[in-house]
Length: 105
Image (cartoon, rainbow, N blue to C red; front, side, top):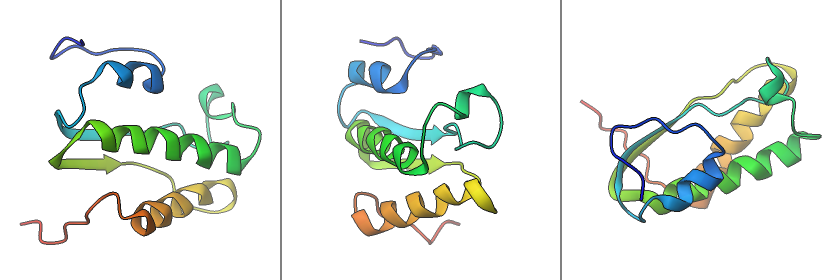
């Protein structure tokens, strides 16, 4: 069981295993990009490998998110290698695992 109000450093796929299903109100994710900047985002050999990894952690986030919870994800949209994010956004939308709420006040 993880402590509340504490920051954990580690692999999200390992840490998320210790979080109870349907227990989180808000997830804000700013994952590494794909070959844009920094050593941390040059660990995947291909864009498809990166997208597969993203799909894995996104579905794990869905498991711990309350049905009334919110999920925000940051990403880069741009030329060249920054085009992975639109593919992920389309997958999220097509997968119907999340409900898009457009009537934000």
